[in-house]
Image (cartoon, rainbow, N blue to C red; front, side, top):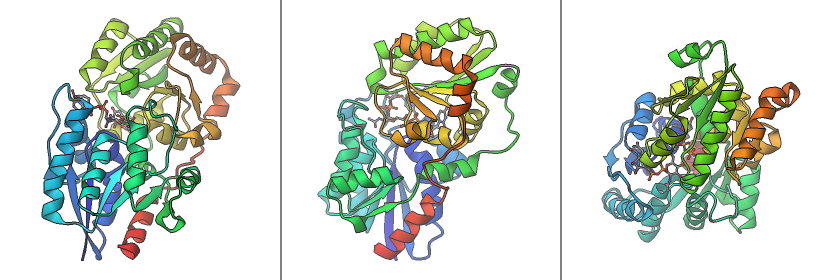
Length: 365
Ligand code: UD1
Ligand code: UDP
């Protein structure tokens, strides 16, 4: 029986890898081993709990104030031990985190093939998102198999010289996750709090936005909330203390903005579904929102997810206060713009990405 080792360490990787773990666990031809880096802790454990996935290994590397050197070296060395012990036939990594990059590098050093889930997304700008664009391109160099969510991602990989037979277009496993989490008629204390209002959902955490851009984002949100009395905002805040400090400085004391702890993914997906629109610098939310038909103002200067922009659901709003403020205002005042952006279109697949990856691996490894 072939051995597949799946490694991940942050919340978004877990959300998009758990559906695949569950699918691979059904296989009679492969045995699946799950290894967590523990780059995140609470935010990762929340996802494992929702999907009821158990890890075989946990490197538990997270420490407060960790930097990219800490994460890279701890994962690289930790994975060396796991891979030398398990000797898997393939290692699967996801996306663009430092856990994914350092795990792929460990496998490369030991001559173990790597499969890259969510391969081929590109901004072509190594500074944005930082360091994720580098991580993703680096994994692309190492990987034997590339599971591309869209045709655009496949084209990017072909243009880099990857062999056609090593690329599979699957859709995004994040859409598989939505089928598991989103329920009709979901209610929570937050949706009840906002039921007479238009609810904005906000998330922000990117490294390159820590500092001035994040201050500006939050100031724009505050102006909007103070100007539009029928609008409320909920912000499930990232655990990074640097993010929390800026949010506290800019958003404290505003009754119609609720800052809450990170939400379990099932509740968060249902919250997105209840939103009027979303403000975010997240990657994964740019995939989930088009599937749910929710307009997104992306608080970044670049995106590696152009399909959502083409579909009309995503709008790049930049990171400057004035730009974000104006985009929010238009979306709140211009009904035809709002309706255009909120038509549900889903460029990221039909929820069968994990099944496709499983079938491919059963045949190839
Ligand atoms: C990481 C990924 C980023 C991804 C993001 C998802 C890299 C370089 N960055 O960035 O691509 O978009 O995860 O959220 O891989 N913390 C906790 N508990 C947690 C999680 C984080 O306390 O469960 C705090 C810790 O103080 C930690 C800090 O947040 O030091 C930052 O975490 P880290 O993984 O270094 O960076 P992210 O910004 O989360
Ligand atoms: N998410 C969640 N709880 C929250 C906020 C976000 O489960 O309180 C989910 C969200 O649905 C998406 C993922 O976390 O699937 C995005 O994670 P994040 O923004 O941290 O990382 P990125 O996608 O930018 O790498």
